[in-house]
Image 1 (tube, rainbow, N blue to C red):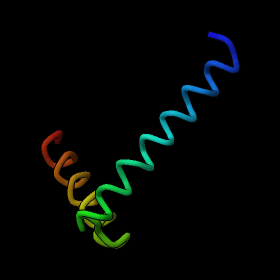
Image 2 (image 1 turned 120 degrees about the horizontal axis):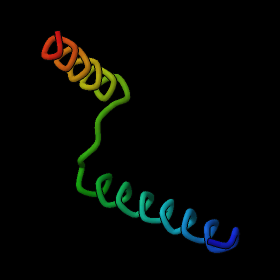
Image 3 (image 1 turned 135 degrees about the horizontal axis):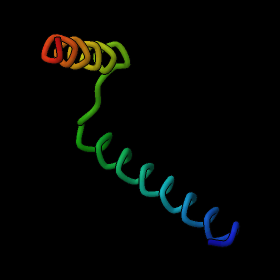
Image 4 (image 1 turned 135 degrees about the vertical axis):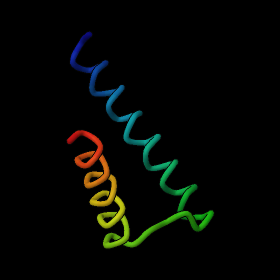
Length: 52
């Protein structure tokens, strides 16, 4: 891959992320930062317990 092609692909990926985020925001599918981290911690704790 050329450097320009790689940069273009990275830019397109970021634009897709922005578009998906915008759709989710418009549909009300958002969480506060605290809620998001709380969910992540729960999942991590569950993984730790399952792997012990």
